[in-house]
Length: 443
Image (tube, rainbow, N blue to C red; front, side):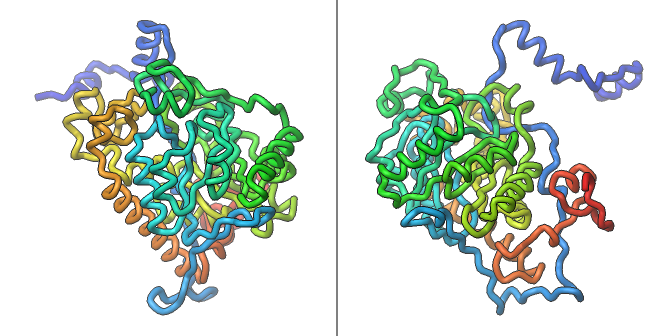
């Protein structure tokens, strides 16, 4: 039996690199519907990433540490610039902001359970603070977003830190979406919205238009919380060097930089694939800005997110200058998203395990990105928390293993000179030498 590809080859057919079948299908869909495509997840195009970097393990010029006898610490302090009570985390991996609305209540509870079990923080996301997440989170960061959905001064005081969100890696310059089928009575009540009506979050804060206004806003937040809470500023990676400098000048204790591989619950695909810069390119720009202001590793911490999947990714981000990383998509996968056990149900939705990205529809068979009571009831937050904690432990142990191999007694002692790149693009973006040379393209 011949394969369709064999027939095409026999006929001498050649697919266009510009108008390939996926592009043609997208044009047909747009022509038939008249609306742009919306989905969740992050950028799916191939981009320079942490996989394009390698570590230089110790041998003669440096000695490795013995894993069973010599310590390699993983703790990190976030927010000790101005706050009375900075966060003291046991590991440098945190949970990124994902809203109740985008995620189910049990999923938010599981994130809190898993993070607390290993001594790290989770983050609220748009739409406010849920009792489940606050109740199960040892350290909870409250996101202060342009929409102000669910914003409550009392909840600000209940939080352990506040994150002022100016942008997100999947959609810098754009607002979020929550389709009507996910606006349940509880979500509507928390966000002061009508039930069942599509919601779009604002792309910028309504009460400020620049860095000076951000300074005023940060001071207001400090006064509301009696200067106890660290104030983060989160930006989507675009003009990272300037954005980080402005955030520091505005008074941020922590800067969060989210690269374009970062995920989202729902936005236009054109945003996800064509706006922003790769995480790998953003980290050195952020570090340069902090170094020039003389606050890198001495006053303002840098948290990096967007496509972190393994302990190697964690170690590479720290080596490039991050103090910690945040994970979102990977955390959902750890909870059970895109699991093969739901293969038959993904097929009914026109998707497959490993490919499901329609987080906006609220039809997630795993019960994670849904507000459907029956689907949400499938998800066990205790089991989900256990899975997430296991995953976080593995990330931490992998990062420790690499740090020891490089002769480091703390994961934050990793540095750019421990790295080389295997592609010219990665070498230029990460500002580390091309493997086997001392050449850093662009310098």
